[in-house]
Image 1: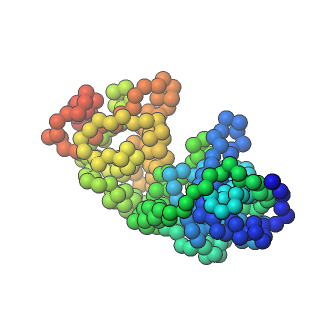
Image 2: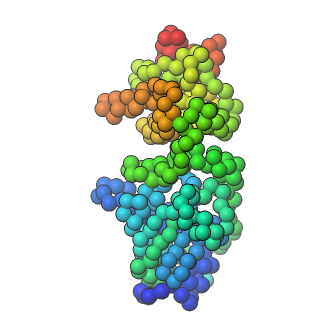
Image 3: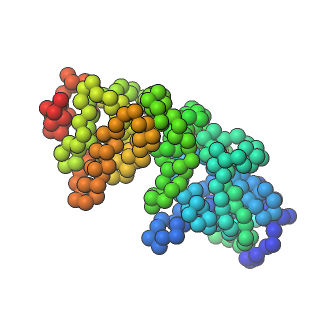
Length: 321
């Protein structure tokens, strides 16, 4: 049955090093915050640094809860389960820290593991409690193989495209805690840089064409109007990226979460002081109004002025040109 160990050595280390997957649990300090459990385990990207330290290469992903919680309080538990052979469960309780890819320590730590496209950090866990348990309740399962979708996905995006993705998806936790906000914003500070970001985002949308005009509305009430001929291309592609829309003429529902993601994605553009940022201001005002009174948020895209009107809000938008 269960036992506490002084070090990860012998059969414990052998067991850990042959695993294909492990699970990570973290939580914020707030009592109403969201506890998080994540699977990890791409071969060659995790292992023991010594008999009291565990680490893994952390790839970019759709969220950043583990990083946010470690930055706030450091608490973590790592669990390994035997899905074949003799039953067993091993847990490492300890304190975790985040070493971002821009940190001086990153190269040495990441060099211990296989290269991973989209890697954003190495997570290092200083273990203060090592325990195992019977694992009698864990089912027997066959290992079939690894999915290569994640490395391929970020391999296609490249270094800068992966950073764009993290700025959109990884800057805060679902509770609003600072998460992966380490990517430099130098490129966002110039018009040329914003243009490069805009084109990278556009290249990732199948069938994308910049709309002639677009706007966001709350219960049909339009905020800022991006009229034909205006300088609104970055905001347009940011919103389209979040909504997974190709820029064609349409009126689309926008969830509060999607609006928040669009705001987070566009916010670094304020580093460029050569231009104003009316869309960002309008989106924030709409968000605040929706938080206060509720209502339905919609996005209106007009790719070509000759396209049929898609909604009353679309007709209103065109009337404001």
